[in-house]
Length: 204
Image (tube, rainbow, N blue to C red; front, side, top):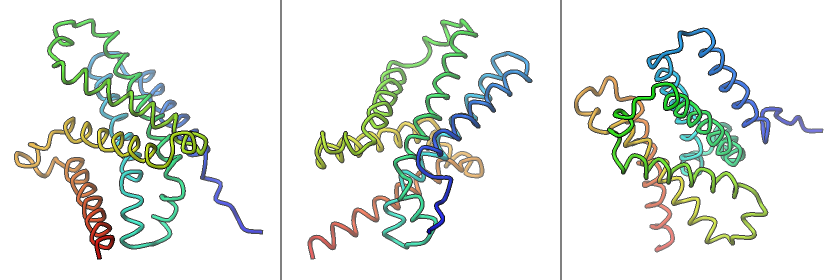
């Protein structure tokens, strides 16, 4: 009988929920409750979400470029990694709400542009839609074409929000501090190169 990797399927998002949620609660319990502490928690949850998003974003292109056991596992578990990202960004949203409820600085809230609120709200709407349709029943109900369109729009919107949030201009000003931006752009380059190769083969 083949040995099954225990860290697979629904265990992945459940582990993220327990570890990240527990770490956030422990951090808030042990730290002084102030704006700085909450903003540190906000940055931490955002980076965990990014780390979970990137494998989902590159799993297919990476596997088609050079197959190995790691990207094979990523591709196999991509659905549950996507759900793990949704869980993580849900925790990130809880942190945003904690900051909003704790600071009570309406001038600070009003300083955010309408684009920020619309973009953030739309992104969370798509995260919810992607999570709800990450199952075989939704795939069959929507149809292959509609399902792929929904998930393509959603994944690129999430990518764009991450890129804008970290600020691509920082690469020119302080490249030694621009790890997330560089990784995001490298992931995009991998996807675009994969799309170009597939289109080229289709036209051949």
